[in-house]
View 1: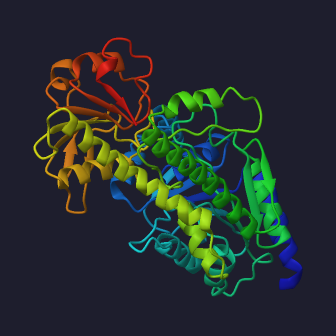
View 2 (view 1 turned 60 degrees about the vertical axis):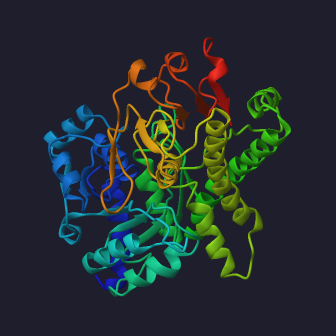
Length: 447
């Protein structure tokens, strides 16, 4: 059989292995996206190899211990002990035993607020050196439209293999919402766009083995733009409500009352709520990816650029609110003892990526305030590359009473806000977390 005659057989063989759960899956990057995906694939019978360069993570996973809130030790330990999930710290097995490679590495911004694709480039270059016929490569890391076709594909083609014939390449954006018990990796629709139609078909076949709903689109660019739009939509609406909050503050109106009233309309509106800033990997980052790419086409995305400005402005507003409230009560910021309540980027999770709390703490420290924090999910935080750590305080009414000001930044459900209202001298509530407090409401200032 000639090489050209063998090529259709390559795709058919991979599909057969996927349907029979005989394919071996490699997940590169075992963070908030990669580890839950690896666990789900192993649960349904695939043999999964996790590739992770962080040695501390590798050691934990080999012991069946999870560092991701959405993955339990019990579920992880069972898969590790059964041999269905193995963890390595290099790419050596990719050429030997792996049929599907899923890339789930970080895609941050650099100091110029431009896309940093160093993690993707590193992963793809190593995959290219180990690429063999019959493999599916799927990128899940959030990135700008054109990443697959303009960056990933040329790197893989240096292997001499042809996409859609020898191997298969697709983009399928992650849609992970850490801490969400209702919508998980399994039941959230999965968008998939392949470089060629056969690439799409094979990627769809792979994801349909473990996921409830897979949605094919025409190209990787369409899939990449889908993810960017989803997160830009949220960022724009958060910026809008944050701007309304700033205006309501000037007008002496309660933004929370207004939003609750607006939410009673059964059509034509989806209510977003203000806060001290945006956090997590996606919302603070993705609009900048879109803006950067749009400029390459001579297009100025004004909504997107304004969104970034507004969501940064609200952080400065919180700092100024702290200064003003302290001044109104006869205190200056310099030397004041301030407790930050909640440092995760959103409620009920242990994730501090891009959390506004970290920026607030740093700015308050720079202005000579004495800052500590309490967060039941976060035992310590690192505030700089130099290893400046803060540790979570013990939560007692007596301790809370010792602070000049408590600032509620993250509204964890497990915190007793009534206890805080009774014990604290003064409270700034950036999330309306204390809305059900009965005693001590006179101490609470909402943003």
